[in-house]
Length: 467
Image 1 (tube, rainbow, N blue to C red):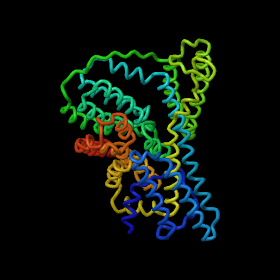
Image 2: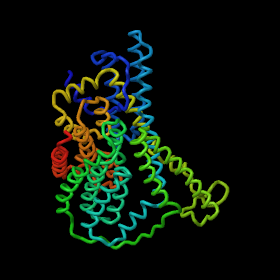
Image 3: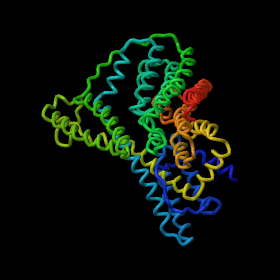
Image 4: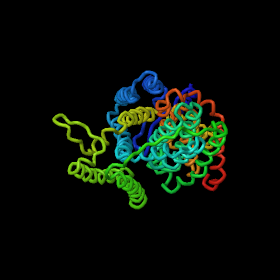
């Protein structure tokens, strides 16, 4: 029975950026524990089949989170303890709050840059470049690798995906291979930066790896992308795309917003490393600066309506609508943020019941850290890397910095093994529907697996002193 629980919990998420001093009961072999475990598994089944059911992933986990904590509170009350459950849920709520505020700030910056046509300009330049399909394959992969450490892998994949779909219109083979390349590159590029993926952000905020240490994963990440990219490039059709011309103008203040985002990242890292304030504080301060600058853009566009590139009729007249920063906030991925809340509370509850302690003993004590961390990447290809990394953080195994870097690498790039293993892959399947599919990705999984193993070998070699 314990090995069945182990297999299930390997795919479960939670976050532990702080520790609780409460003495917890072991309820893993009780009706309370089994009921909570079943509730979460059922909720996560709905999450896995989100695309098929058209049910937003936040809905089942939010419901399961509430039910699980009601069960926990009742179980502790039966033992005469009416305080521990409330204390534990507040502990996990604090973890979620830090994550949500950080992500909300980053999402608002990205949405503002998108609204100001920064990403549209990049797409237009590539579409109008007149380069060969092979060159577009390599350039979009390289840009995905270089942009994702800053803009996150999901946003990067969507931008580059739009390029290959436009350039390779009608060429199904090119679009499919290029989308696979973009997913691999975006996931690999997001691995060596705390800003590149939710998993790296979580590891950074947990304190297991310092900001500068993430760059030790640069070469393994390069290997992870380049090896399968080189193999897939040999199957590219030798053709030139049809000539295209697309003119895009960056809206007022667009370049300044990019600079402000870079300044916010530098400020966030600096205050975290020098005065040890949590990263979300720096990001929220940057968001405040963005809101102040958004006011300046709004006033400028109201004074000069011709600056507004796109007009929206209001209820009374046809006056152009000036920039509004709160529309960028509104366009944040609220379903994703609520999903994280549900996930953190759900499996925080399972940790309170004692399941993650059991999993940690089976996984890291019996298998060893290197094998366990390698398997984490394989698991992330099936379930998604975010929940798997949350599980590892909550188990909090006693590992060296080299092993924490290894699990950061494997969780980040392991999701590339299958199209459903990362947010970038799932998003591109929707964007390039009919061209990039689960089966088209699976066809090249063997090459991606070679890159996965080679990146692990590279890390074990160049960072051997950290292991």
